[in-house]
Structures are given as structure tokens and as C-alpha cells.
Length: 542
Ligand code: ADP
Image (tube, rainbow, N blue to C red; front, side, top):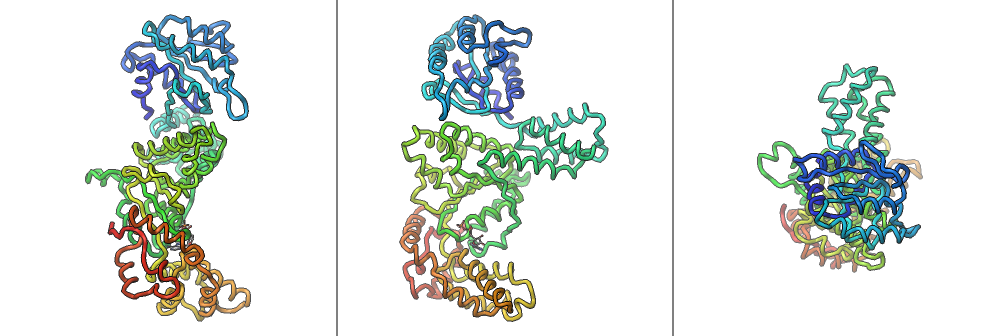
């Protein structure tokens, strides 16, 4: 639900300027008019004017002559002596951006108007509605931003019902109320216009509307989400069995699946907010994000935070807000912020007049206060670059550290990849994916290997056999292991340093049992003792 109270509070608190960044000017205008013309919602009912550069000022009844120019408009507002609200469309064009400067005279007039708007005699506010969030620096402190949410399920359903009623030729005989709900849920995350277009597309397709049309709506939604340029719908069929090791992390996630269900409400458990997964690259952080979507049966949206921060300054704030509101509209959903450090480290630099730190602030506040069922999984390789604010209590439910896989974990990872690829009987005549002894020797030999290197060993062995057009041999694997110089050797220092960091701040993604067995076996006392003998992360069971 759009927060009616918040907007009426902003109006009553005499905020001179309110900015709503949305494409949905008609829906937003209707929403505002409902508030300011209803005594129950606002104490002093206002006259409402809408302005466009082409048409000037208009009320529902009349056009105000000679108000198309912004100067004349401002003059009119200044002189108007009744409680009123002025909604200005597309005023951002006077506010400048990276390519063009702001219209200094208009910006100055707006600043001069503030005392009039704040005066106690009559209540007047101005609301800017624009598809772009674009505020000149000199007005930053005088403009409040109001987040107008995308349509909710009940709004979409009401709209669909209206479409069905007005379009008598559409056959809806197979459409149950339950199907209708599903179609509308699929349209969450779209503006009302986009939802209408998607429904219209399904209708023209075959003249009927039924549950089979969900696919078309989801496809439209993916297009729209893709168009944001920052969010990507990640489709994955990876499940819990595709992750070798990381038992602690897996258990934590499994415990929280269905945390938004009706049954969970009975236990009064707080909805999980999010998890930060850090650690050695190539050890399964992204894999975990993808598998989570399957385990929790929720859509996974990947946010390219680097794109937001490195984007054209000025529109970046709007991008972040848009991304957040799209994810919230799709909720319940998982938001995957991949390589979060890449974007956030910009916020510490001062070379973009504070835009990055404002965006970072928006994201942190949202993380802390969000009420929509959006679970954030943030992944990071380079923890040095994470700002301390991100790690404060209350942001994430837990911070996990993914270390080099232990012996038992390497066995599991080998098993995952052998089972995935060794399918053909002829090719695997001499190598069985369930041969425990063989897998044990691979795991022992690959000490210090990360998950992706283990996957590469399997792929490389397969290529050797394929190239020579013969069945796989155990030797293909042993050779591939010997030929690999693992990251744990080439980046020993970095691994040791993130491990030190994790010892204080993070929980180990591998289980206690796994690590203790590893220690008892004394593995790791061979070539690179310091990297492999100890593990990073507090060893807590979850
Ligand atoms: P990162 O930790 O850098 O996000 P990824 O999750 O992208 O690493 O891992 C790269 C690939 O390596 C995965 O797609 C997967 O095939 C393999 N891999 C890494 N860790 C594991 C693991 N624990 N179990 C199974 N496969 C793994």
C-alpha cells in the first residue's frame, strides 16, 4: 500500500516541495488527489492544480490562462491565496543533469518561493512528478522525496477485473479466481500500464484469458526488469545437492525456508532480513545464492550494484530507488547483491559530490527498515573494501565466511561434479562417479583447491578423453590436479588476511564436524601448511 499517512504528513508539515519519481503520473495524481480532497485524510482540503509545460495549469474544471511558462506558473502559485496543491509534471527538465546545466533563474525563483509556501496564512505545497529523479544541489535540502510504490496485488486485480468487464469479447470461462490471483501475482513488479499491456497481449494472443497465460506475463515482466539495466532475473535449477560442503550455511538457510508462511506466523519469528556471504573466491558463494532460490522457491533478482554506482551520477539515486521498488513489488523474493564491495567502496570516495554515499545510505536504511518480504543475499570477495556501516548489527542476520574446502568438502564437491558430468556408460567405463576410494584420492590430492578448480579438474579430464576419443581414465584426473597451481598458493597472503578478518566477524560456512575431522586427519601439513592448516570464521553451529 502506498503510504498515505506519510504523504499527508509531508503536506501537513509544510514541506514546500515533494518529489515523486515515477512513470505513472496518472496513478500518482489520482492517489494524491484522493488524499488532499478528503477531509478524513487531511484536515484542510486543498484546491488541486496540475501543470504541464504544454497545457499550463489546470484544475478538474478549468484551464488557467497564461501559465505555460515556468515563471508565470511560479508567479501564479505565489499569489494564489487558498489552501492548495500544485502538481507539476516533468519539471525535472529545468533541473539540469550531467549533460546540461539547471535553469538557474527558475531554480532561484523556486528558492525564493519557499517563504511563501511555508508561511502560515495559506497551506500550499508543490509536488513534482517526473519519470526521472533529478534534483539540483541547491534545492537538495528543500525537496522531500516520496517513494510511490508500484501497484499492489489488489490494485492489479481491480484493474484486470475492469479490463475483463469492458472487453466483452474475451473468453474468461476457464479463468477461476485462483488463476486470476496467479496472473496478477505474475504481474507484480510492473507499472499499471505495463501490467495492462501484458494482459492485453495475452488476450490478443488467442482471444481468451486463462492460467496458461502466466508464462506470457512472466516473460513481459522479465523484459521490464531487464530494461531497468540493474536487475536481472536469475533462473536456476540448482538445488541444495549441488553445493558440496558448506553445511553450516546450508543448515541456516534450510531452517529459514518458509519463514514467510502462515505457519511461521504462529511461531512469531521475525522474517529473515539477509545474509552476507564472504570468503575465498570460487568456493560457492554465487552457487549458494542460486540454490537458495530453488530451496526457498522464490524468484531471485540479481542487482548489479556496480552499475548503479558507476552509472551516470544524478540518475544513480533514482536507479537505486527503482531497483528497490521493483524488488519489493515482486516480493516475496530474494535480492542477490553480487560483489557488493565493488559498488559500496565508491561510497567512501569523495569524488562524486556525495552521490554514492547517499545511494549507499538509501540502501542501508532500506536494509534496516524494509517490511516487504525481500531477503537479501550479498556476496563479497574483497572484505577490506566493505564499509563498516554495512557490517553493523541489524543489517544482516548473519555474516558467513566460506573458506577453502576441507577434505570432506572436497569429496562432496568432486561428487557433485562427477555425478553431473559422468553420465555415459562408455565414457565412464573405468571411472565411476560413486567410487568412494577414487573420490577420496582425488580429494586428498587436491588439497588447497577451491570449488571452481575442482570443477575445472573434472572438465579438463573430460577434455583429454574427448580429444583422444577414448574412455576416461583415473589418470586424467590425477594429471589435471598436478597441472593446477591452486589459488591458495598464488594468493596465499590474501586468503590469510581475509581469514583473519573472518575470525572476528563471521561465522564459518562449513560445519564444526567437518573442520574437526579435517584437523584430526592432520591434512594440510604438507606443502602450504599455513593456508590449509587453520580455518577462518568463528566456528559456531547455527
Ligand atoms: P564464488 O564463491 O566466487 O561466488 P561460485 O559460486 O561462482 O564462486 O563458484 C564457481 C563454480 O565453482 C560454481 O558454479 C561451481 O560449479 C563450482 N563450485 C564452487 N564451490 C562449490 C561447492 N561448494 N560445491 C559445488 N561446486 C562448487
